[in-house]
Length: 126
Image 1 (cartoon, one colour):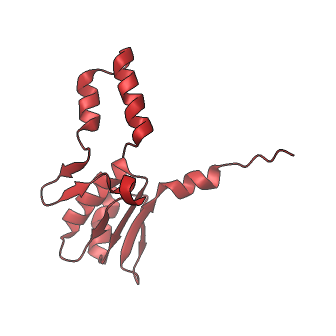
Image 2 (cartoon, helix red, strand yellow):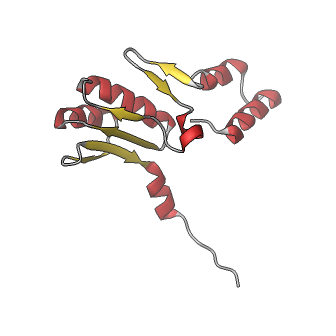
């Protein structure tokens, strides 16, 4: 998911010649919506609400959930799917190995921001 700074940086790369127009168009193509085979993903939801689209697994096949989850995980550091089964988890795990699953909550999630936050340091200056 691109925020305003990333879009500006991409445009500056095009202006400087560091990125060709076709590559920039490919990166911007998913803004704001992307149509997959069975669903349309709202990639701007993060900008509006602070969290990307949540996948409602009930009524979707394991393959559908896995495809949607994998695509969202390519663009967003945090992804959540609710109302999933073990079959949904297994299909999704095959595409996104670093996800988490909670059987009782019937949810799978990915939080790559948590790892970055754990590795961040704090500098205190007095």
